[in-house]
Length: 215
Image (cartoon, rainbow, N blue to C red):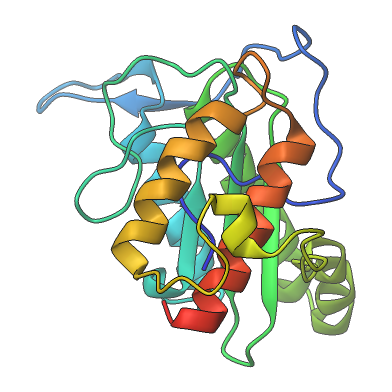
């Protein structure tokens, strides 16, 4: 299971260096009833999320097979909540599974707002679907191999040790995930003392724990 919060950046994907993110140019046209011309407005989290889910739906991907991972707190339906303060790390990663069981991911962090990175992912998906529309289904399939979610390496330490549980201790899913949230807050690269390596170890340990005790 890939957690939607905090951001789960895919292993091996390069990051935009700190301070190098740029302003996005994604937006929507707002038009009131009776108006001939609409006015341009910045895209919202909800609109950008809808674009991503819409593009994946056109590829035959059910929204239940999609995880949108960011540093934004989530709504009850598991999607990013609008109207909250922008996180320091505005990156976004979208994980999904195809009807054939292939696991894929696309991640972008070149913009300074989460909504723009999500919109960029949607725009990229649309551009790649154009390959298929023009008869390049095999090209599209090969292109998406670059977005395959690679299996995580085995954790260097047993997952109970990573989470601070005694060896052989019985651990339930609620307890595991509560510990994950607490440790993720401290290990996140944006936190003092946190790092990508520490967060990666925690994510691998979570995956191993859920595999052992059931998610």
